[in-house]
Amino acid sequence: MTGLVLALFAAAAVLGLSEATRVGRRRRARDRVARDAIADPNLRGRAITGLRAELVRLKGRPSWTTRWFGTRSLAQELCEIRLVLALMLLVDDRPEDALENLVLIDPNAIPKHLQAVLAMHAIEAHLRLGEWHAAERVIEGYPPDALNANGRAMRANAKAQIRLGRQDARGALRCLEEAQPIPDEVRPELELTRARALAAEGRDAAEVWRILQAQPRGALELLLRRHGGEAATQVARRILDGEPERR
Image 1 (cartoon, rainbow, N blue to C red):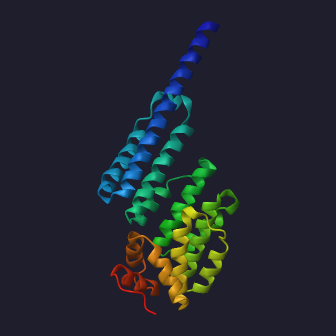
Image 2 (image 1 turned 90 degrees about the vertical axis):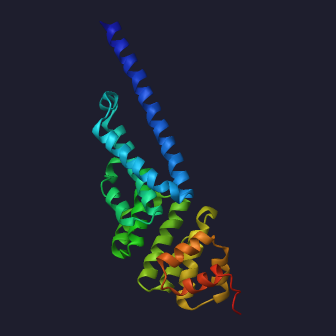
Image 3 (image 1 turned 135 degrees about the horizontal axis):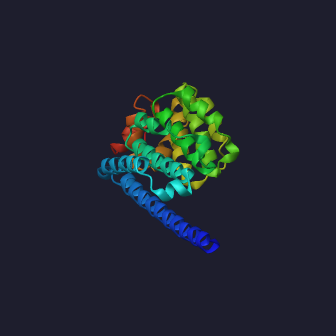
């Protein structure tokens, strides 16, 4: 009898490992799809459709190994899919759809690193929609000590964007000072917010030009689309049109 029990446990362990391997393979495939879709707008629609189909498939037909080895494992994978889907929707400029996915995630049921991703995606969606109070609630509800250097810088950047949304450019600049030193990976995004704040204040026109000229063309086009009424967009338009800097 003991031998039979041990054999059953051994078989279960093998099946659990097999399930974990499949989960890891699906995660890597999703990462590849997301990277490709971020780089190529033509792939985004297919990526979003595929992620939604994967959600339906996992929710509707969990394998018996998933039932044996953890509802938590299934819940975490569903969360990971929703986070990637929300990212795709944000990249595709659909913040309302992104929020619809994010509100279905229970932050208390996922690891801290996924809580951080959830918070940053929700903040970004609220900022895009001009929902300053909602963005602020998410920021204040997530402790900065749980973030790495990039996360802390992006938190300061979000706070600065909220100040800009409330017509407080000087407060935005103070928020950005909190992020010093700025990690290289996120420096362009914080510099863009700084240029918007300086332009709104009517200060350092040469510095605004320098910052915006260093931005990739796609970032300037997004600036025009999302913040068309701001002073910084006038500079961005001249740069995109190839006009020289005004002295």
